[in-house]
Length: 314
Image 1 (cartoon, one colour):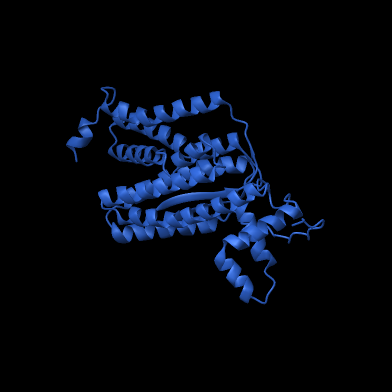
Image 2 (tube, rainbow, N blue to C red):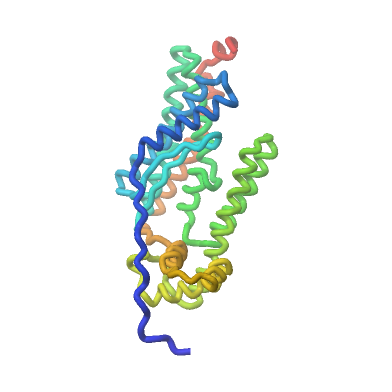
């Protein structure tokens, strides 16, 4: 079948602008504290320490995102789950992505080590608890499981364009979270593991679509604005064919669905990435990553610090 010489202009897709809203962040923190205190009413100090640790962790991500001019950056707290910072760019730099992800766990971990040393010297029980919280949350966050920062670093170290790898990694992460949740009797973690299955389905769908696009020699590594009309039309056809619910909706809908289809096409695109990280950089990062995880445990079992006074007063 001959291809048409002319492809219609792709629909305009308006960018969603989300301004930083510190009022919303403050509300999410208040909700986080309120829900936590409903369950653990006598743990006010622990909750305040938890907020502080999470805020410093997420602020690290946020500041670096702002530095690299990410758009739609915002911080939100989720009751009983944690916190996250959201942001995006049209085009990414691999080095910038490494720095954005690293800016959360590593500063928090080494701040925890400083607090640990000071608490041992000055024998401050509240500082011991704060340092343990800094260390625990940030070390756990460096475990290479999606969606933790360790998982994001691992994906950056490999190649995040490989859909099959992302699919397998997300599946293993989901099953790991469910397994750990069952082992420690944490139903929140089990539920979170099951929620990840929604993400897995999305990755699987994109994997199938992109595989067909590869067969058609269609380049989908592009921003929507730079996507040629021909590529848009070809991606559009594949997306509709591979999304039965969308296809059925389009058949019964009498309205114009250009923006809806454009958003589906946009979700298939992979943002261009500038691969500006050397092997040396990756090796240093891996070594720093491993040392950062081991160091807190080495300090705790060494004779350098003394916490006998703390445990005697428990």
